[in-house]
Picture 1 (cartoon, rainbow, N blue to C red):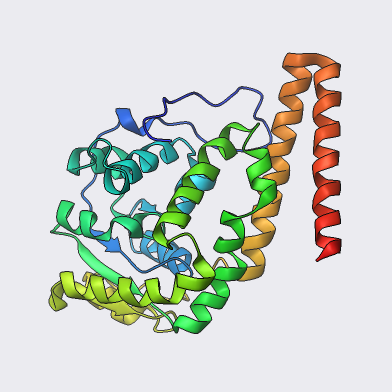
Picture 2 (spheres, rainbow, N blue to C red):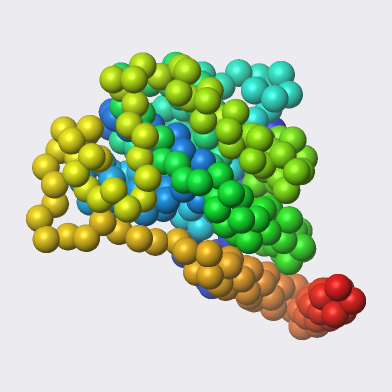
Length: 290
């Protein structure tokens, strides 16, 4: 939903550690230096950690919206509405509001706006993380495609503040970017996307990077020294991704239950508890049938 108003985080959300910054009131405070435009699941979380180690603070990532500051999702929805639905505009001013605290940006949903970001920040260097398309598709199917269609996340989004901001944004991005069917169109979108980025960025301003190449090509491209005695980071593997998402769901369910106890009393809490139990039972029955 575009142009949804900002609402502050409930005081009863004690099981998650989200911030609640309204980016629409923010401005750019540091220069944008790096656009890391490789699709998610090509090592973007590791790259984020690496860029922070190299001094590019902060580096924006999907986790910035999903688990760090969920109100960011409001501006991402504004950006989707402007690009895909023809509603409103989203230009340099709005990018500076959303990303103004960052010197770098990577991962989805930013990749949906590769052209717009390159035009907004022509002085920024572009890094294109990549990997074999088949292994990428297999990894993404088990992680982000699963998360975008996670029935438990959809359920808790009806009740929890953070999930209610994040889930609609993720679903909008996923269905739009991958034409409504990741399994069918994912590989084609991958190949078309990488060809598009290569065509619009001058070769001297583009680094194609694969995980495993280490610090040297990255540091040479960014003109920064190689960190001494530090291994290149490796984070966000498939198993860890799923475990973290499930843990996030549980924490947000706890937020909802606690709010019901504080605000609505025991009756509301009992109804909510029964609803959660029924939902879990339904999910287990569905899994059993499959």
